[in-house]
Image (cartoon, rainbow, N blue to C red; front, side, top):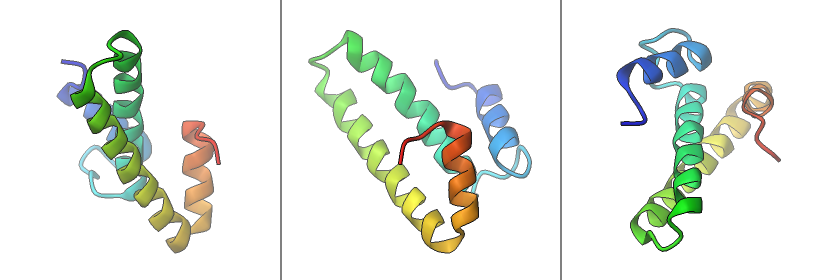
Length: 89
């Protein structure tokens, strides 16, 4: 499996306040970004995999909504997470 418990804790520790901080917008955006990158690589190999494509589109939408929320709430946190994850916009 590509996303182990240790990898999740690492992501939450790096982008959240601690390993138990799974609810902050930054931690969720970072997790979605990791999963999106994985599915993007998978889609390059399996172009006809429609189930994975639908999951990818859904995750991109969820990440977009979280980014919009963060932008409305605290623009500095939004800019920091965009820069840290190298997301365009």
